[in-house]
Image 1 (cartoon, rainbow, N blue to C red):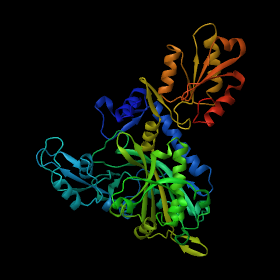
Image 2: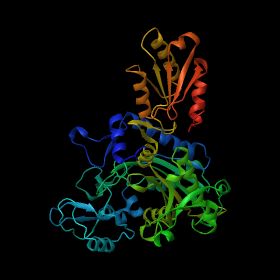
Image 3: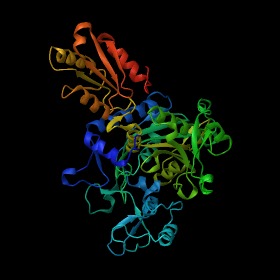
Image 4: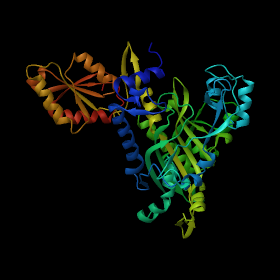
Length: 502
């Protein structure tokens, strides 16, 4: 029986095969920061490109931008981040070590719903939570702002203080007027961008899951507040089934998600409007297309005490990690008109749009995806181990290499023919060539780094012009002619996941 994948399994694979490296490793590493290795860099690029293709390129109602990492500091005053973007830290009264309060409670198996200092303090005292390092008593929770501050220009003036952005969303709001003017945008429409965000996490943990530097892919979709139920795409997703855990159910002590149709959730008022429901369903459809199984995804509504200051309603899309349970990989919020109105107030600019002959400050639905968290979910989903042999069964959409080309042996002209085929195919597919070691070891390495198809050239190739295509997930081998190899590879890649007997 195959054992359940562990966090150590994922970390070891990523470090050993070049998906990710601890940043600054030659100096001992830097906690909360990771560098992408060659395979991780390709996987990240494919993930972002697929997201951009699905949500921007193939639609006519979303515009893409790419905002600055450092912007005018008043942006973060208007957004509420300077005042409200905090976690609570506790300090050991004996050794001085600092911890994030809710993480200490979660590590002790205590569920935290109300993230107020009073509630955190009560739970720490009642459960006798002590310093993990020395066993000392913990002080009262204190607020800690998660933004990284920096200086622009000379440091001796207060006006030089700026911030590394803690999210990409605000660059969309501050560019709302620009996009409307330059692109002639009309409601409803969205603005999308991806890029780095920075949060000074008190206790980064779980490999890629909680980092201090990470990447987001975000959409702000603008809708007339009077038309939140006028979604022309709703019929395409109303029968889509998902697993839901509502705020009411959580408050009653329920922890198991239940299956439900999107249409039913709107009819019963669980999801506040059709546009919010549409973006939840579209997000899940994209995640499933990447290879995450429906039964490993659930939609959890935020309870009132965890709602962000800007949100009327928020749902997290959570993935079931075998080693840490259900964890958020995407959030989908109804931000109302909070952000645009705040920026109007702080900047003095009018951020409205004309719709049906009247000025409108639109409401916003925000699907916000975490790149590293989705990559971690994909690696976890694909990781399989059988008799000490690892296979990474990830979608060809995000596989670092789509194809590997091997000569069976390095003699008799077989290697020459293999290189000829490799050079013919590498401009079409991201591929690599390998002639080292036994063919079995080369197959094993390809399986471990997620290569969907291996093409092998042997003596028969020189006789009849055929090659072997080997499928990673089923280990089936298909004999095809060299002249039809590209077509068959394309068919196989587009028909994943495969079943035996293809």
